Amino acid sequence: MDLVLNVADRYVLTPYVYPASWPEDGALRQILSLLVVTNLGAAILYLGLGAISYFFIFDHDLMKHPHFLENQVLREIKYAMTSLPWISVPTVALFFAEVRGYSKLYDNVGDSPLGWPGLFLSMISFLLFTDMCIYWIHRFLHHKLIYKLFHKPHHIWKIPTPFASHAFHPVDGFLQGLPYHIYPFLFPLHKVLYLLLYVFVNIWTISIHDGDYRVPDTLTSVINGSAHHTDHHLFFDYNYGQYFTLWDRLGGSYRHPSALMGKGPLEVVRRLQAEGKLSGRGKTKEHASGHTQNGRKDE
Image 1 (cartoon, helix red, strand yellow):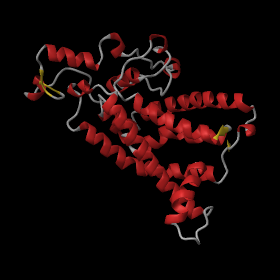
Image 2 (cartoon, one colour; image 1 turned 180 degrees about the vertical axis):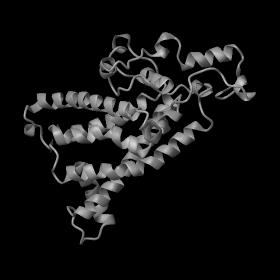
Image 3 (cartoon, one colour; image 1 turned 45 degrees about the vertical axis):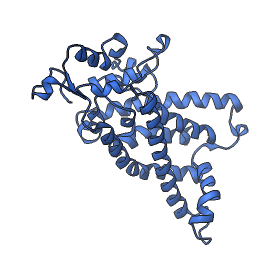
Image 4 (cartoon, helix red, strand yellow; image 1 turned 30 degrees about the vertical axis):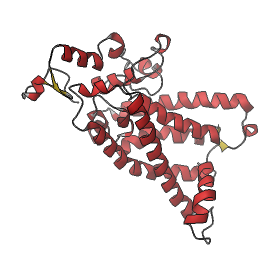
């Protein structure tokens, strides 16, 4: 994060924001700067990448599904933008420790214990480590004593859009993001690679909420994609993983995606349309007349 802070200092903060008496390496200035940079960066990544995914990838027919909520997109955005500033507070504490040199982040490839191969290995280990940690954190958040306090708000979105990707309770969002910040304190990692992985993580988080259920057949059993994660939102007890299906398989929580078996949300919409049961966006005629369909209760 010091690379981002240095750029911000050079082009914006030093010449236009802070008085000359505030040194760039002052603790208070760094904390304030990190708060601004973190919140601004999070908002840009979320809104920018979310909008691209929503307008160019997300299948808007999903908005006709009975479980799609009234004004859901605006509600997702509002919830996320309200939570992100709170999530940033403990996150900035970790970024501050990085900037102060307490992590194992390094500047040059030559500083890696294994050189260029180490760069590649650190990328793989980052994904494996964070996937493992997020699986168990996510599963912990589904515990009956924890779920309603922190994780239930994210499960309001039964049929998520890309904007649901960051619509978490602040505690939930921070805990699931914690492995990304812990990794460089435990293992060597190039600073530029860390930033690239941070962007990738945001892209991936959006992608598993984007309603694009297409997965290459050879990767279906390995990669946790949007089809897998949609079943997590719909059926609750399955597919806790972030990138891979490994820990779901080891933990007995893997579910083959219903969308890949022709039984997904889009098939529900098409069936209801064919039967003439859709009376409006996200509502069946049964819902419109005050009746409910049989289905899984909201956990």
